[in-house]
Image 1 (cartoon, one colour):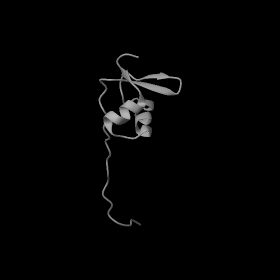
Image 2 (image 1 turned 90 degrees about the vertical axis):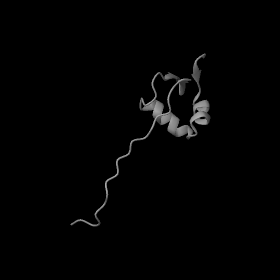
Image 3 (image 1 turned 60 degrees about the vertical axis):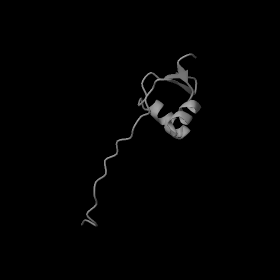
Image 4 (image 1 turned 135 degrees about the horizontal axis):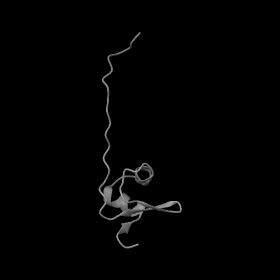
Length: 63
């Protein structure tokens, strides 16, 4: 389809794993994704999703 890329093309463009692209699609982190059977079509102008992790500092063992 014109204007869309495959999961494999997104992997190459964004330099992340196939599984990461699939998870982003599944969890709605990429806008405009179309699912065709078990495959995803991703808009060519889609922005690579970013991760937002929050880490808490550990103060050692707590009782």
